[in-house]
Length: 463
Image 1: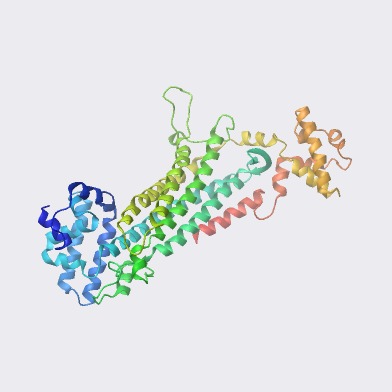
Image 2: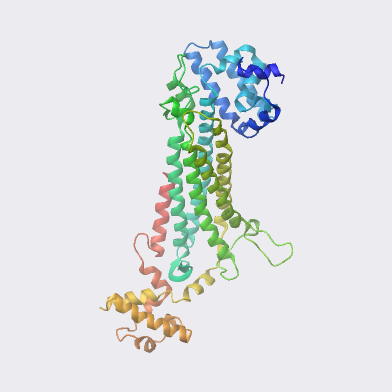
């Protein structure tokens, strides 16, 4: 591009060309060109509206729309020449349009600014990405429900402080993961409502003197409504911050799940097997099978949290309206989108393929006196106050630790030395099946409740 061509982008204000380093430093085309589809989509809608408003002729509109269609094809065929000298995706496409159709291409920018143009593009782009992420999230949630239903009666230890607490079912544990993701999907869909507002028509910051029809452009682009203050329209990045916030929370949930997967695949737990395709080996230790996918997802949480802080910091001191600082909004947002989508895709593929080692889980639930609370509840039903029952069971557990016996392995005479209220029927509550089945209420771990929760979950994700 010649100096004269470059200066034409700015009009007549500048008397010299931009310094070569500054040109490279300030350019965004290296990353914002990923929004080319949305930029073309917005420009075609803008041109259509300008023709309906009488600002463009029908022939000019048709030339612009067709030219932009051809440019889209060039980009997708890898034939488009991107120029750093033209700064960004918007000017690259507009300059190419002018090359193709002449002076009519210069009329496209009538009634708008790059300020409202980029604000529109990024919302269109994020709206498209949210739809893809929603699909991956739903696929993961469906996989969790299918696995939970299959393992509704598989017994494992439940933990607090990573110590054996009470027996639960594996299906019940999986449904806890599902609940996390259900909230994440609610946040994602709620965020979309604020993403789907149209800034176009705000122009640089104050609106435009041309007789634009913002409602028509809004309709053409499928927005729910227009941004109703021009200053806010071009400077607002709340929607990007909100998306990064929900992304940070969702990846935090995936990180918690990852931590459990890493623990459970270890030789010390051996609760589950991950298929080989989701693992790697060691270059020096031939026996190793490393759970790389959950480990990497756990690690990516830090970068997503960083993107949220970056955007919050970016916006905290900006006066109205648009500032060049906002060029820094895209790379954190792009990477947050890519990271979340990748993590969800990996999990959606991996979770249905988990294979629980059911006997190992069951044996682990037998250790650690997991049915101690059941014994305390049994004594309460016999008329003993809970605090007294708690003390009685504590002594029984201490005896079991000393004798290396679980409560269910003790004889009736052993148990009765702690309370004469204990009878033969105590063994019904000291079994693992009896323990989980007794918690037969909504939200409980009983197999019937797990299956009912799976049914409710399927209704939730289909809505």
